[in-house]
Image 1: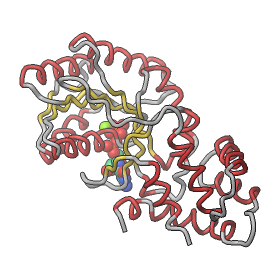
Image 2: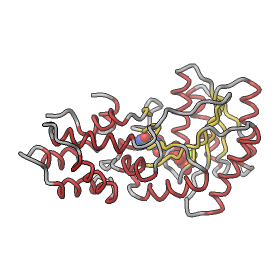
Image 3: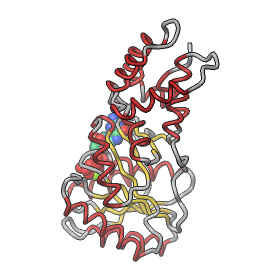
Length: 296
Ligand SMILES: Nc1nc2c(ncn2[C@@H]2O[C@H](COP(=O)(O)OP(=O)(O)OP(=O)(O)O)[C@@H](O)[C@H]2O)c(=O)[nH]1
Ligand SMILES: [Mg+2]
């Protein structure tokens, strides 16, 4: 089993248990049943309806119902325009991670540094979560583990100033990346959303064109509320991509399809565990394959 298949084990078990009944019967599947099981998997009612519509329009070339569903899912995940890889066009490239509390921002930041480090890229981690004193220590511990440098100020200080200094430090030392950790915040708190906008503007002053990516970290176990989070963060700070964490901890990863299709946001990575290697590049074909399993 691939790492992705392992990570999606719970989701796959739930998905295939309900799909097997629907897809292995003779003749065309009952689309009403299929729609219901997609909704139960957190695909969301609107997205499920759209998927079913697409399924109806896929010409039956003698392929199995499972293959038709796989095709429709991949289509929806790829969407328009196709999702490119991480935008790393700057020197340094600045990536800001945002999201509500506890979605996995800090852990994911370290995983990204580890991953890009393997490609020979050096990172500076900006401890711009100055809200919780423990956040700076957490980032430092993770940074030591993955061999990255941290720029931090005192707890309670201005997060935008930390980000500014981190970009300057990377410019001076010739680092490839600046990864900015931000405090978790509820999307319903307008003041906190404004603060994120300020962090991004100040980064742009330190380096024109930056940040190159604003990555929204969503917890896959939150279900459909993730859509509302995506909507508000996208509006407030121009999110450029999504990282979906904790897919290993849910039987309902259908949110992946919803985020991609309803929000038009590309999914860059998925988190499938707490280890530093448990961050996988998102590939819609691989994902659907791992979710539905090989055709029977
Ligand atoms: N199982 C699993 N756990 C994860 C994953 N990503 C993060 N976690 C765990 O989620 C918990 C919260 O992670 P953090 O990185 O501290 O989350 P955060 O978004 O920085 O939290 P705040 O800064 O408080 O908003 C930790 O216990 C992580 O190990 C994942 O992909 N799978
Ligand atoms: Mg954090």
